[in-house]
Length: 305
Image (cartoon, rainbow, N blue to C red; front, side):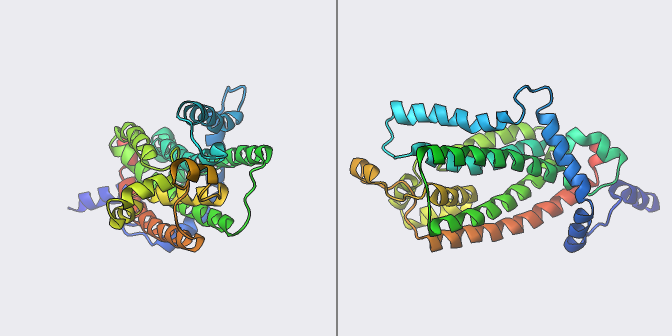
């Protein structure tokens, strides 16, 4: 019994029940290491690349070209400035997608660091989120330049949804990154299942099709179905917030004339802000739950890597 207790102490090398506040202070103390890991992630991503960070800017441009041809030429979308609508949703989605893809391998790829150096292991998936924020900033620049070139300017209270949506997105992304980062150490199939899950999630989120279209179809079967969808897919709430803030036009005249439908969800800015704030609060709860789960599994990382 005594030997088993000693083994557990060596295995975990940390408190069994950590204090969240104490852990946050420890993460702050290790912020320099977190910054170095973020720089390493960015540098490794573009090692031996001629174009470097430009690849991050080409990603949304490729989506833009493909979906513009599909919806602008083949399927003939009636939405004006459809590219802005598309890019506003992709901006949010790419941060989540890139962060989770990197976080799934964050602990595994840093096995030597985990085995030889003490550090709060949460910094590994959080560094992946930080590296993804660099891509997010570059893709935001692409969107701003494109909006300026096409003279698509948005003003007014809609813009208030952008910071709220971004905060909710960052919390949700951090929570899920901790979860997949820990799971992939024990179950290596996680990274492969994640790719399928993200692909499915993408098409169940109104990014390339009108969010109002989805709202109308679900509400036709009952208001509860639309509410259930928003609860089960918090990313949809966040994407809708980005779209409302950046695209701005709820019911473009050309869309209404052609389809008798709007482009964006029928809701006031205040109502959408309340929903997204609810997502942020729910994501904070998930962040705490997945952090505890990460901490519980992290004691076995050195043995399983």
